[in-house]
Image (cartoon, rainbow, N blue to C red; front, side, top):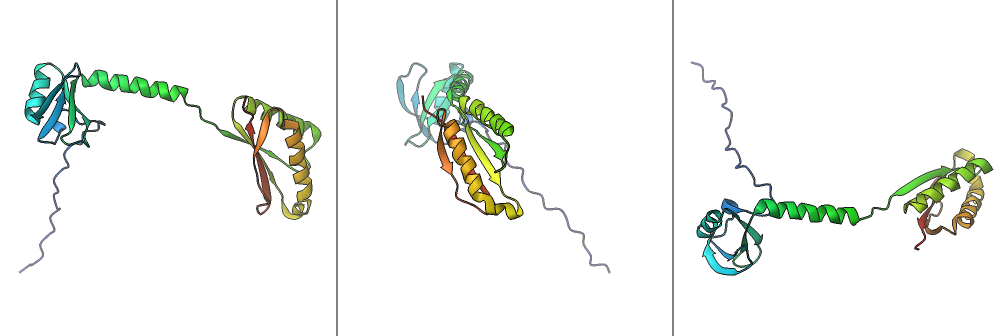
Length: 188
């Protein structure tokens, strides 16, 4: 007699689809009673949630939970599509006004020649004019570490050449085999 029984796969219940919205609307509101505000902004008082949802649907609108942390939660009768559209517009406007400062990195050597050095300074001035920070980094290979003072002198020269458009934001001490200096645009 064979006692081997094949294993059956364990079936798990599928999770209910999640409402991906920021606010709970209509049937996704879990509180039993809610404080309801109508579309004109008048308080209608504390009403059972089902009644409030029916009231909103009779008006062709949605019941939206706007303050879930209060007791009872505050819900407003509104057109949720228009509400989401206005919120997206506000967010886009705020994003447009926000400025991100980037750090552009330029690499030089302690023995970078005059022509290349002038080009690096020209690029740094362009980046600073756009409002970005500029980081000059210098790496020393092998025995070059003995010439770190020459690298510091090159950074001092950078400071004097860029002092009209930038301020030194950060100047690193010797870290291993590299040093760097960061310039920030001067405030107008």
